[in-house]
Length: 203
Image 1: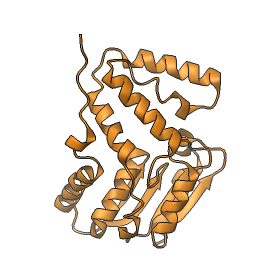
Image 2: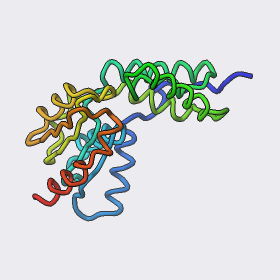
Image 3: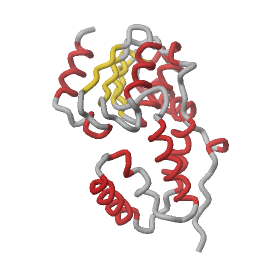
């Protein structure tokens, strides 16, 4: 039995298309610019939204994201896509993004393999293909809104340096780095909510 082919990103609508869908929904729902919270992949789409439709955004708050993936993130994305294309369970591929511990990676790999079951992973692989090609470094200056970025200092998906590049390129952007935090634990840090609210209420 063959697995469904994973569509190439060239035949799909990656982040600009996703941002356009959000922009249309925002225009239909709100009469003035709104605050936007985006985390990880949602954060990269929010960056695209801010660049393409800056008039709709009041203040973006972005966690665990940047203008492009880091090398480890890209490697894990490609491994996921390749496994999905071969009909293999793909979720073990990103284990290296979760922990640097060999035992931890083995556990995550096993849990990912079990969780995948026999599901069709075509849609997720297509989304990851778009994320793999995502690079907004040439468009960041188009975002006009005052932006706050949160980043874990040990994030392997979107490392700290691309996050710094992102903050430097957006006029007035601010970057908060949480020492010792990984990609996932950035969002569970107890400072996240309070720092976010302080930023949003400050303006």
